[in-house]
Image 1 (cartoon, helix red, strand yellow):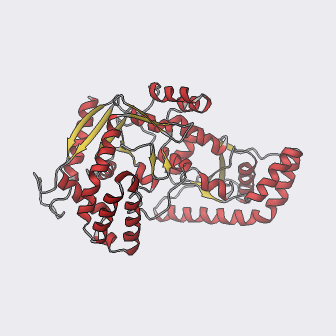
Image 2 (cartoon, one colour):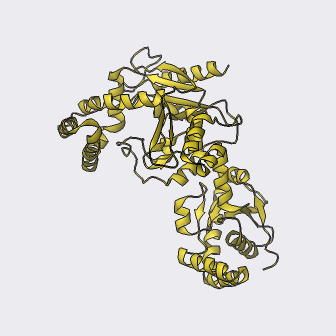
Length: 432
């Protein structure tokens, strides 16, 4: 088809448009979409996996013209369905704009992408433009498609070292992980750390509510990061590829003083932290280590992992029992069975207390060592040298201690307001 030229947009422009509520359509197959996509995109596949496979075979064994002719035959029966779905989405967005008092004569813009910004997205963009009245609809495709977005994700996390890791031998990979620092253009990350139960995730959420820039890795991964990470998470985890996509889109276009990230390991549940991001985290100039008394930590753990609404659920009880059992190789059979007995007895405070020593040792090792994942093997490489950033302790207190105003929160709960202010004060003083 001649005259099928469609305006293209960059990855940055596309992300900005989606944040403002633009319609973004991923025309790749459902399986491609499931592996990873631009956050906010709606999947309206042009082909299914089998049809796409046949087209690729035609392209490889014959030529582009033959593949294109086959594509036109394949999409003809489904094009009206596609156009109807897009029209319904546009109508819904327009109704929403009118209800909010926003009336504009500017044409509505729909964004599309496929794998490399070629035949699939351009074809459907052309059909959309032809189906609308002149001036009412504009279509734009992502330049170089989804692969350009994936390059953006890697470059955002300083991907140069990771590319060398992929190409080089294992010894070179280890050297790069230890010696290569992130680019000077990389944003400043402030790590929010501390032993389990000090309220790290609560601080991150409070910082985000206060307008600070936060990357909530556990929220993005839908997992708390330990064998008990499923608690409070109702949906399955994304793929590691899409996990990286979601994380990079939590980064705003502005350049904040700090980006606050929880002190995670290289994996959050089944999701692998992008090696570039993990390297940035391990080279963070500031690590805020939250410390709290055991009594307060146990209170926080019971609120987060064993609230009344949770432990009265039979599924929670069964899964918690199984999760404790998964630690038998690290805790030993006797301690594991003792914890399971306490769990059956509903002595959740004793269970939490029994697990603290194990998790405290794990975090202390994580805090004090520069650790990186070996991309060429499944082992974890550890280096006895301490982290390069400055570690500053911030104390957490219960709400009843030095409370500034009356509150309705249960006495003994974490004073998140005070803790958040103290974390911000430390970060501000360090940056000045």
